[in-house]
Image (cartoon, rainbow, N blue to C red; front, top):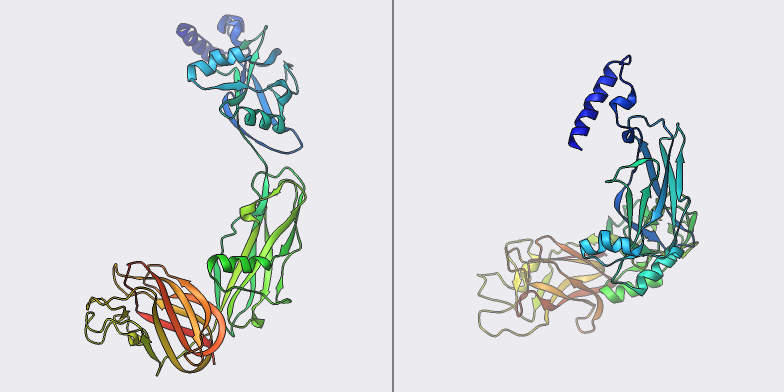
Length: 448
């Protein structure tokens, strides 16, 4: 076979070099090489089917090549039997391949005839997803396949490219939803909030072959559920301050689109707001449960309040161990990141959590946010989580929010239910180091 290949190559060179050669085609090229058929997308191909009412189509491409592809040709397409499948694939690979039933597929043609002008032929394979799905569920340990072989009684077939082995990977139901429903808070300063324009990506999780339409609604019940789950203080945007499209259309070929949402920020007072846009209905398929809601969130910051004259106290302080003037409650108000409040530890009289730090702002404000800073230490950033309270008389307290801190050096801002009062209590309930809590600074935001 190697000798024949060398002669064939040399013969083709001669043929191209001299059209008046005394050798004709049959002398230069063996007859079996005049026309050769092969499967263009041969070998193993993984196929994911979509569970729809329509057949899923896969295209088999048979190519005619060789030294004289202008000749006519013919070929037959057949499905391997289970015994052939076992002998050729299952046993050598030690894989439990199973041939799908005849009711799970159909071939548009089982034979192809090439005219002199034809260079390729396409044959559609229609796969029935619901039948394939049932087979997979009946025997989940098997690998379900459709192995096809191209043969010919009259023409040469490339033995390395004569089979298409369709490995049916999965049958999935397309789902519609928002591309990225992760909650990201956009922050704005009260009194200078522009009209907020938000473009939100929405679409199908696969190539779109259908005419699809979805109905969108604002689901304010979602806000209460979110607040309960995460200890947040989001409230609904007032009616008339936002515009959300009622429907979204995905024509054939369009997989994703951008929905435009607008919010009139000038009408908003300080606080945390959420606009949860939900996919309520779809014309076909399913709504992706994890991507059904886009929680557009914005924070309107109150003014950063001047802390001049404010005082702080705590039910536990480290009076000596952190150095003179350090470790005490007042350090959270001194604008010095090198100092910090710390729960007592040196005397051995540590008290268990929770710890309370109370700030007296000396007059009443409507508080809207608090910002906490961890101790500015390489490792000892202790405070983990807790609660916020507001009071006008230091006796009757209203819980206005919770917080959960990261072990970072930057200020971490937390919203509270806008509440009027004079005293702010920070109740620490969890620590990254059991028995220790510390804070470098506390900033308060609100309106006078």
